[in-house]
Length: 170
Image (tube, rainbow, N blue to C red; front, side, top):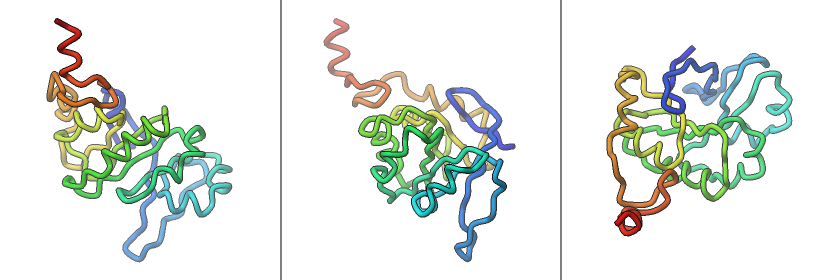
């Protein structure tokens, strides 16, 4: 089992992320294993994925359209967003859209090239679970929540921008 950060705590995680190999083939997964499948596989055969004994969740690539999941979000216990490179910020928009436009209330997980430097910002746009990149300090990553004490702009977690908060606190 892999350790992740979820809701500010380090926890053991039983989910298996399904990724294609170099030939584009997906490994077989036991029916009773909790699995996170790519959006394309989910859309290609929803009934089969929903009928499994184990739970099924979906992961989105940076260029996937979250609207394609809109009618399924109430049935998904987890939606993950892949960050294939530390410098690819498109996942932030996906996270915020899932929370604010599509009202997704389940676990929203960041996976891929996720470092402690991103944790605060990902938390602010609505992510609540993080698979920190292998080789990075998981205990040290918890400090990412406290990187900043204030934010200028509005976020999912702090919808009122700083200039409005300052006016009301005077």
